[in-house]
Image (cartoon, rainbow, N blue to C red; front, side, top):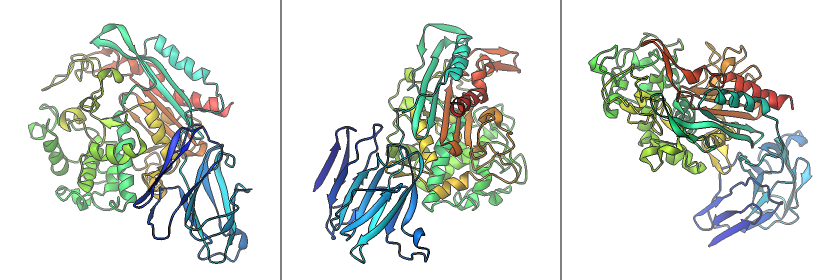
Length: 552
């Protein structure tokens, strides 16, 4: 039996398959009028229900002697939005209140699902619910509150003139381009493109017709891969009980041993305290460690990562930001899941969220170069200053810039290689603000996220992979002066920055192609001119966004 319920105002379909039962409840950007959808079930049918941020059955099994603490709770929602699925087991009637407003549930049928829009009941932030007078005695029902989703239609105008002026001034002065997304209280309140996605065809030769930046332009996220790919996978594995970060790495990668490796834990890698050097140039024969560590083959590189790459510090403990840590974590994910890193993430993380623009090696998967913001003008040569076997020399567009990811790990690595656009990242930021869920999908638990966001006692700006604002404003260049101590995020070498601030229910995604610019300087001391602009310094843009919100 198949039941499809279509909400005309919202234009989406809620589906129920009765038998091997599964339900899909999809949120909408335009809130529908409150409706009640009824799905009758028989006792013999097995029910596979969607994930939810809160799942609670009433009456409580072990109620408190304090009457007014029973059969109550909270859920996160936004004004004019929210979905509640009521699974009635055998009750004939009950009083259900949302924010002290009674729902119209006058009569209930046994073994029936009721799907309610909470559009007239919710406000931004924490909402309350309570259930009373479940009849007859011994009857029960289960409430399931869906995770909030992102609305693309903001209800309130915010004046972002100052941040627009800053970025547009830089673009006029020669900065290549950017896309800015701001997420506040579950709404994408700003999504703006500036400048060009591609200005040069080679070296310093300008295009006659630059390719304009679009709001859906995809970017090489560089080290933001660490949080939006590797961390998402790791938190999912922790939530599923497949990974314990306090165990030695060798528990999951048996060949990871020798030279003190057996003492290194997964947490050491996550906090950049395993003792590895910041970078390791497998792709060059003239690297500081010699030909023995040369590799432009993914399988060989992974073998070197697990068995041979030397520590720069013999003991773990000191924080030294290193891409090596996250390269190894990428291999660890592959070993636990039995899938290539890109396949696992694209199938198990991004596909359930319908994020089709977040992926590795996009040019091999049907995307065209024109869909991407370009990066370095002369491949990886720094305008001819650097040479090595198979070095790229043309403008990079849709290929990961990072040399170790591209040459040595076939474009798929735990530290770099992910491409995405601002809208997809806005959804992932909202999922983080929801503590691991979105709509009817839950990727990881709130406790797993909390574990990854715990400041390290040795340096409060380090979480597990995430960089934290902390209390001492040591990273105000990243988070600005207004971010709460709970804010977290990351930066990327190509010109990307993210800020997620739960205290304000806020996220900021700034994607730039700052490296798509001329390089000036000597053979050994040089700089991308695009990085000299204020927009490329992150903190000023972030600061002006907070001011626009706090001073409205």
